[in-house]
Image 1 (cartoon, rainbow, N blue to C red):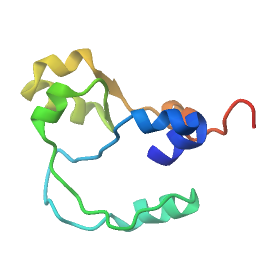
Image 2: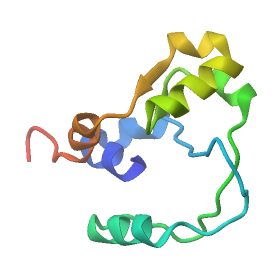
Image 3: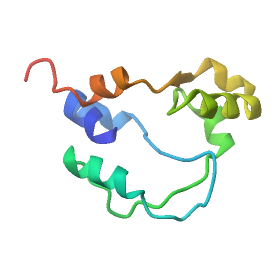
Image 4: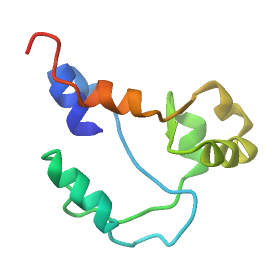
Length: 105
């Protein structure tokens, strides 16, 4: 996602902090092979990746929280009810928008 933001917004993307975390362990695990293959297909880096568990304090501070499934969304909102204001269920269309080339390309 960070690479897509950079491609689309250039230097302005530096103002956006992007992080990733899971709702279930184990923390410290390598990326799943299917995810590695997809990132490589898109030309995105994945070196030094290790999984981490979701930091609920970070959810409270976030301006935007994206989840892969409604189940993840519901789990996060049950633990951090205020996240309902910042939550967006990750849809394929959003991924396509971020991955799309800039309008002037």
